[in-house]
Image 1 (cartoon, rainbow, N blue to C red):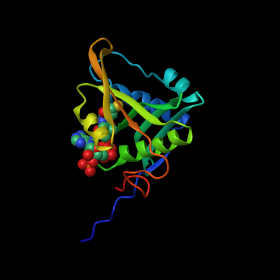
Image 2 (cartoon, rainbow, N blue to C red):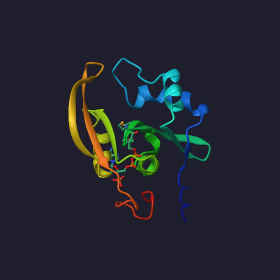
Image 3 (cartoon, rainbow, N blue to C red):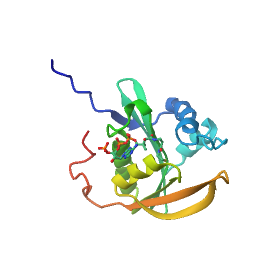
Image 4 (cartoon, helix red, strand yellow):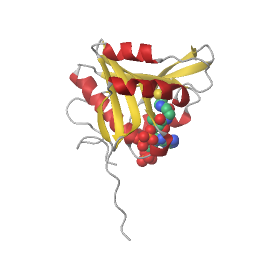
Length: 171
Ligand SMILES: CC(C)(COP(=O)(O)OP(=O)(O)OC[C@H]1O[C@@H](n2cnc3c(N)ncnc32)[C@H](O)[C@@H]1OP(=O)(O)O)[C@@H](O)C(=O)NCCC(=O)NCCS
């Protein structure tokens, strides 16, 4: 019996209709146990309206499966949010979202992409390391005074992506 390969997820712009979905997932995927919501709908909507903000959604058919939000300022891009639904992980979805953000960041004149994540997020850290990001500092009590942030960054290559010269990471 032959198996039909799953179609690649579609990556497109986060629409206003997606914002409530993202805002509802951030506490589950990124802020578990912190007791604080940093990205309610109102704040996320205002953030996405800023000129140098880029928001992306990953979709499988009609289902939303992942999201990413970045802002570019002063030749540096900062990744604010990245998440993929648990059932769709380890299929290259976040890699594709990040590769697309990196291309946008380059187009907007950024030379590097920075981010921070919770010290306890070992899986997130391994993900970023696999994509060429390296730790560049730590900040104690960053998350609600309770958890250290690990800062990471990657220099953005001009021209082709040195990791996957043909474009986004194949899945
Ligand atoms: C971290 C996260 C975004 C990764 O999403 P994903 O779509 O599963 O990532 P990818 O499939 O693109 O992974 C690419 C590579 O990263 C590494 N990686 C990803 N998840 C990993 C994990 N749980 N453990 C170890 N390595 C991992 C692997 O090298 C992987 O390649 P492989 O599957 O061929 O081994 C996802 O687990 C998530 O949403 N986590 C909760 C939110 C979060 O932590 N966001 C990031 C911090 S802001």
